[in-house]
Amino acid sequence: MTPRVLVTGATGLVEQAVIEQLTAAGIPVRDFPTATESFDAALAGIDSVLLTPAGPPDPELFARLVGAGVRRIVLLSSSSAPWERRAPRAQRHFLAWEHAVEATGLERTHLRPVGLMAHALRWADGIRRQRLVHEGFAAARHPYVHEQDVAAVAVAALIEDGHAGARYLLTGPAAIDIPEQIRALADALGEPVRLEELDEEDAVAQWRAQGYDQDSIDIELITRRDLVDKPASPRRTVERLLGRPALPFSRWAADHVEAFR
Image (cartoon, rainbow, N blue to C red; front, side, top):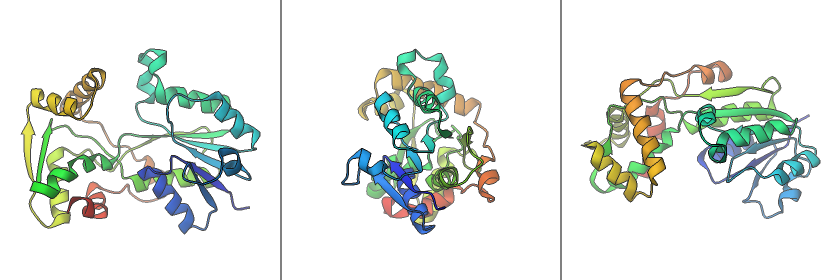
């Protein structure tokens, strides 16, 4: 029997990619909240749900999923979930969602991407205007993952058996630094792109101007310093699950080049 899937948070890049991949495979899919119907109506006849955390987990939401007869939940969590154990309970966002999903007793799979390659979209305005990127901690290396890979793993977990109870840490194929990312974007554009590296003080000022609160700035500083000294290692989870290597940043740059023109 072909499963029927509901995707929440359907405006995100991963969620959009999930919808596109399910549609291409001929799998019936609904999206919410972009659907015109109510949530209960959207749940009617649904077998599997992709959940995107938004705000604190609502017990009523999970009661409705159970009551509607949903069999399987795939949660778009984060690699930060395990580290949230150190945070006050009120700040355990992804971990709280994981626990809430587990408490339903339904089949569940947690996806923990380490960070999307789409983070580079924050440079789009500067590249469009001046072919220029201002960024601090240029030597920080991280194995960002393509949203299409996260979506492909999500699709597998939504429609296939064998993923119940899994927590998948999802990375790209290599840990890359900012100059490598900028070179890939320049290659996709066919034009040079310059990097002007900010010192730590200016990087903090930039984050503050972008709306970061002090807690977020402190976390960014710890993370960026760590990624300079101890780059995160890529995992082969995507390759193991999909039977092909994870997509490189050069592929992401080519896929999104129009955002930078």
